[in-house]
Length: 228
Length: 228
DNA sequence: GGCATGTTTCGCTGATGATCGAACTATGCG
DNA sequence: CGCATAGTTCGATCATCAGCGAAACATGCC
Figure 1 (cartoon, rainbow over the protein chains, first blue to last red):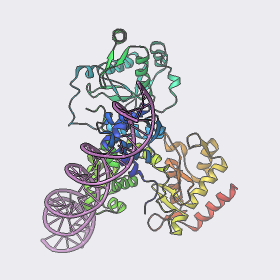
Figure 2: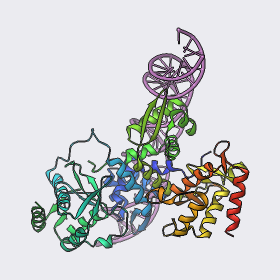
Figure 3: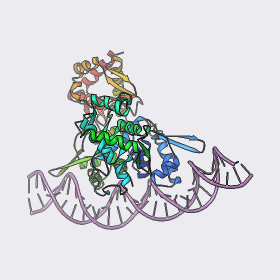
Figure 4: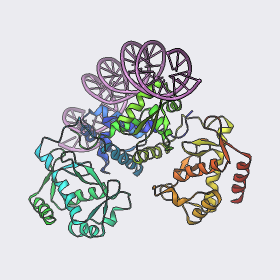
């Protein structure tokens, strides 16, 4: 005799490691094929197929056939809200059993973390934005974009803060796995990575690695030096 | 080789039916003893003990010994945020396998749903507040308290809207299990139920039932008739 | 048509984890 | 001191479900 909706069913859908990894990948708001998600989660195609069917039945994702591919995407904003809330919860747990960081130097330097930038460079950029006063630390471990920040992100990086919408946390700190210090996540973090791609400052490398182009390396180095 | 925090671990903690039921109970922001939670979840004390240990290890709850009791409470607002996000996700799923509603007429009429009021009366009240313009429907299936609403809730029910704090959704619709129409949830829903208790309009009945006193029945009937 | 690729279905196996009975410890009461 | 109540630990059982191999199905390309 329970009242209200069944939260356990939804949570246990997210609670499987393979499924949660797929959902994390989908947080970038793009649609992924079943095969891509299988590879991302490190499972075979059969298993992935079963997982996708369950996620769809649970209303967490929508599936669309297109040719011989089947694209999956998060069902709506409510789903990403829930995932992000869980992410925030999970982020604050110390993880003693985890390795201190990626062994690959390229990964240490710059990599993608879901839909934003992580690694050495990402942490340096966060420091830089804070030092310039583009971001301000606010209560409860949060960050806020300042007025100068709105101008700065627009002028220097071509990011229109206003266009990012009203989503509650426009930017929030995400603890960097290798650096153990925060880098930018949230809509602004996503926009930052997209800006770097579209300006040709970075390219996708092996796996999660992100390779800086010569021009990108120079521009970012100049930015960071500027603030010290 | 995963990046970022482990969302699956947290989600699977919530994903167990017994544990999720305990967490739902704890959403009322009070501290419950281990035994109470065991009864609430319909499991034995041993099992509950194991669950509580896991929830604590996962950082979802905090435990405090006091004499021979052990009180459990949600760790912080981040946890209830995540639970509410999941609740919102779960609420929109049709549940064909579930019975249409409680058989007990008393339960149909008025009962508590987590920390707010549910049942016939609760839905009537929601209709009433909307009709009076105290609440306004806003985008994305939400509700907002209007200026007249702030005065009304204060004058008629003694609820100080300003004192409810800045928690993002001050009020949100919660689909009523028996009526299949929304009633008030969120901080305002909680305050409403508390107001009814403190004014002596309702008393706790058997289980989840809420019994209206003679005076309470009259006052609510007058309120609702007013708006038609 | 024939072939490669992407996806799904079927059947089985194995591991995880929830559950409870029983016994044990800790606290409060008289 | 006993006694009662609250909570925990231990061990064993049992159901659930992720996972994969094998084979089928679907689609696009030549």
